[in-house]
Image (cartoon, rainbow, N blue to C red; front, side, top):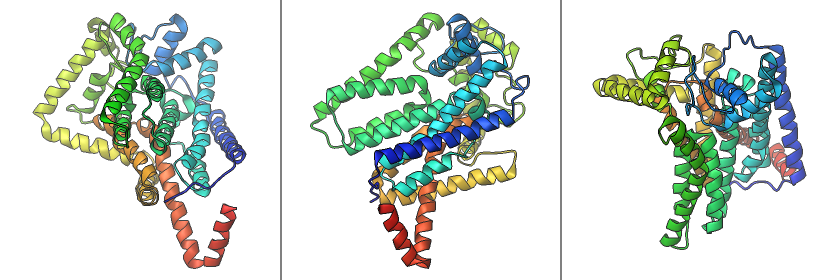
Length: 428
């Protein structure tokens, strides 16, 4: 059983601040050294909706032509991004501010992994190693350095979710006041990151399996939790009912994304040149069709068409789904060495999870829930580097556990005296 080393709070804060500074400096340096040509990086859905929020106060027009109010993206990040646009105006200045904002979010990942790793029960050395690996790790270049999508924010919310789950598993409380607070927090997380729904549901199910006062108490606790989460989601749902004519709870674009993943073209990756040819974000004709049909009806029709295609091509559906799963864990890359590095990280992480599970079953189960539930929605769509980005830190954490485990074993076998002295030094 791994037991976190008793580390003074000031020491944790000092190292976390140092990690933040290093990660932030690296990313800002890359932003400055490799300035983006925004003529070659036209705004995508998230940025267009943010621009609409900045100009009109409405979450609207995510596509190539004006289409009106939208639920294509979750509301939290475009509101944050739109606020930046309001402050800095339009043009390259606002895009640079957007990049700096994203760099801050990404640097916070490195800083927060350290205290989270300690909460999960890792030793100080393993926690520092796991956090340190996040400093130079940049897996989605445009997403991380240019802030075009909400993945860096989702990363921080996933860290918060795992922290909440870890603390709850260590000291479970089924008091109604705790259910209220937890429900409100989970509702806010889902409002920002709807893709977390399967993971949140699995965490709640795992919590329900912990020792409880009675079945009646558990039922009431779950009801209050779900109700409070619903209260947070209700304004967004009612807004969508009013402006879209349908009570969209999370996002409206499932049919569109499903249609891009399953069709005769057989594209499976964002690296495929023509994968977005029929996406209304880049295809004006499709965008005008959205305006005519309405966003909800457009997505409903695309979903129905795709489901008919799936029923007619079960073999191709199975093959494409297998490729989606493979690409999620072993990402494609145009540079061969980069792909080898991604593959190696996945394998190291899987092996590290085994070490973690046998040393600290609770923390191993928490990471296992993330790895089982988080990718589910992305198994049904084409690969993009931004999709796995929010959980990349969990892979780095597990890989760090394995590297430290192998390092310790090597020291004990090759230099037992030195290893003992090193362990004693860490304890002190």
